[in-house]
Length: 195
Image 1: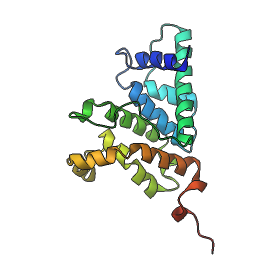
Image 2: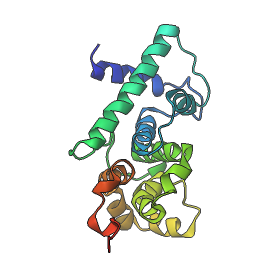
Image 3: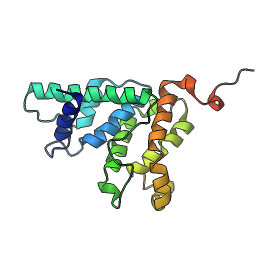
Image 4: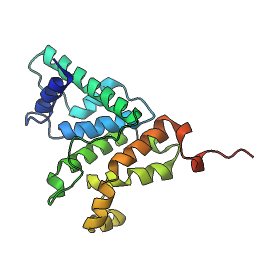
């Protein structure tokens, strides 16, 4: 079975109604795996797979479980390779929140990404809190999880500003990846100065 076929089967499985309400659907799972691929801390597979589903899914049999989990692990490796390459990162959905952000796939992707961040929140912010916060901003805005906070509510109320932020997500992912995984390649301004 090709990787594309495996992904199709994974998508059908994750998008099914039978999963727990808090389980991530395919697009949210992609965001989640993207965050795990960027994080400087490696989260054990068993831990992130269990967190993704919220509670163990009802698999048809052991072979389906093995296939779904193996495809998730392959997808995460694929995302990590894409982030490490020089190509622009493509999300599995439109970079648009549409007329009803809560129903948009992009919102789901951003929520999934933030779920991945929350798994190891300390690791994200321990070295360069201000830069990471700034780079995460477009994703935090897209997720809608922070709309209760005044500064996020102000951004959410301005459609043009929202759009400007949302289109920065692929660029922000690359910057976050370099910051976490290749700190030596940071822009010169961030490098320690030798006197």
